[in-house]
Image (cartoon, rainbow, N blue to C red; front, side):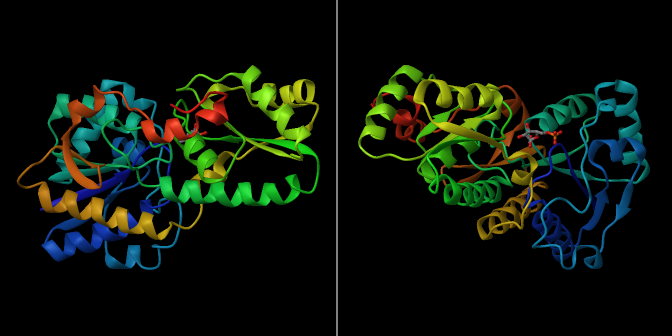
Length: 322
Ligand code: F6P
């Protein structure tokens, strides 16, 4: 049986350990592993190649994806999806394993409805915004990259009377921001999913300054697009000199953490161990378990943030905890 893997959308740290496990587990189970290079773009262009142990030697500690990725605009046109299907037929691929996020699974949904190519999906994106799923490959490494950046910024912040506004990635999803704010002891956490009250925050901050506070760390989600506004707010309303840092793509890099490597291996094993009995599923991680879910269920649901975590961060948004 020929099984091909591709990585799609924003790359994330942990994709390489998953690719390594894919090749090893395919061989262990007597399947032939194939790589599709450049994500969906490569599928359209027929960049499909047999994989070997040699390809995956020494990649476990590397961020990114050795088979590369893409955000394909051509995929939105049926003629290119048809080309992709013809390439799969030509190479006699029996199963497609896709590592990607929300957008990649939507792309897969359209493709599956048209051509019925058997697939297994594995959530991978630093955004952690897939519905009915609590962990995507790349999230733990991104959180640790953010932690290190905040630690470093704190060194300089604590040496001055200043406010530091740090913008984290995640598109419309505030997961990275929320967890980072709580885990790193920030004074402010602003995300698209929850209201915030600057007046209440101001009252508290002014009181804290009187009591001796000398600096602020504010974490703001990129999806809100208010990083500069908050920087000015600290200057004009709080009277603190302030600096903004957009963390940007460093959040997508870095050597995969231990948790990332373990989860990546498990996601892949579960996909390869189950597709013969229960094909065409997304392997999700939920409530400390791996659960196989229908693609339809995923694309038709909406993700939500953890209520406990939201509650913990209420004071950082200017409200009382419930
Ligand atoms: O989806 C992952 C992500 O890193 C988002 O957090 C971010 O908004 C986006 O990708 C950036 O995309 P690009 O690398 O195409 O600029």
